[in-house]
Image (cartoon, rainbow, N blue to C red; front, side, top):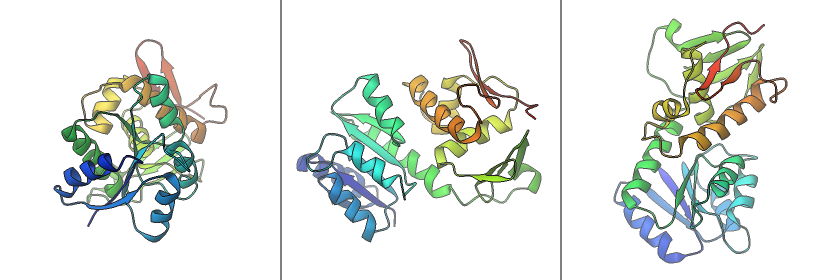
Length: 234
């Protein structure tokens, strides 16, 4: 069974989310601050976290920073704040998605399913011919069967979302991909707020594959159009 941890200091919100997601067949665990959430993670196998930002004892920002030291499971932030700066902050410290309160239960369920699909498929793959599961561009190598990425022979640790984004680029080397196009293909949702979300994940990928992320050799910006993966990086 798929296990979801809901962490929010408002018990009514936790109860409502539990009703929505339990109806989808998920097993729900509850926490009411960041410390409780980390304690649940230590004793249970959790596949996704819905976490509030503003909480007593330990807020969501601190909790996600600590859990990212050990866990790669997807985290969806819940917050009453809707400003882009707050969304970007959440993504910057390790969240995979962001939902603003008050939320639509249908939207929450759709986003949960999207993140779980990516996470639970990470490390498993459909049977494909070998040439379709391995990609190589410059010094980058990506194996879609083992879900591993290497830079000049050294393993690079990517989150499932980062892996899917980089795979998309490696499937289309030299092609310009717009943020909306990337969001549609990776998140498989309408590209609402795609620019800031994609930009943060691109920055994280650059920090892992570029010698100098400020002067990228692999993932480059094409002004007013999007991003492209250079084909001939030495």
